[in-house]
Length: 310
Image 1 (cartoon, rainbow, N blue to C red):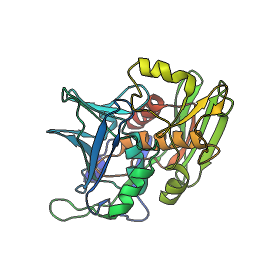
Image 2: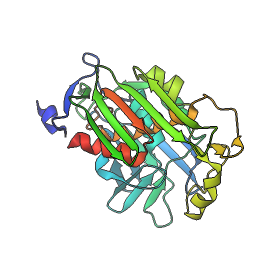
Image 3: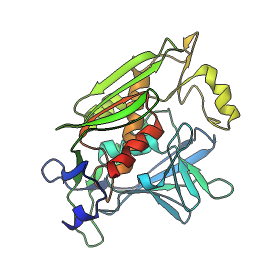
Image 4: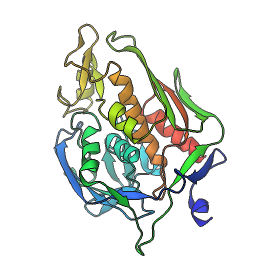
């Protein structure tokens, strides 16, 4: 009961073992990736290292560390950012999405590209998907995580007990009790007919489905909005190599798409990364529920996590 009492929860959630007694996992070794960041446009090196059972996932740069928890999530444009004691780490959603989906429950994430003031770091964007992070995990593999005393820990998952939702205008994210984890996402871009209205749903959501149907999907943007974003100091590192770009009049500028509904699938990828911020002490972050979102975004995703805590 000690672990259950320590887990932050509410009447909405019941914690239960994952797959009849599965143990928490971590990486079997360290793996490193380097690439350009989306917003600052600078190069960044990220090293993923094994973590102890019960530590969960956390970011480390210089002498600072920030746990990958909703407590430290900060609203920021076009990405998810963690902030603690004046230090920030941004564009974390693709990496956390891959770690959550592939079962890396405990991980030390070391980032080296701290800005000149030493207060902010950013994760590389690569091709705009999570495929590079999935490949990194597959490169070193997984092992059972143990604590300082060599003890393993049973992995628990949060099961939703009653429906819940959060919304803003005509956008919403809702969750309904379910025996399996399922996600349904809808987007609507009437100004860009090549995107239009799309829906994507998967049941159940597991490692194989994630790697084959979700992780490959790239981030996207509307061509006519690029100049405005750059004027705001964003997407300095954005290019045709790390996003799929759609013009309102001319359609996709850098085809082919990997899936006909690739933009919608990428929204699911982001949702998984944001919901992973509910993970505590190395346990599962994604609630076992049917999660339904329409025209959502990072802020609404984070709002749902905060409601889970109560």
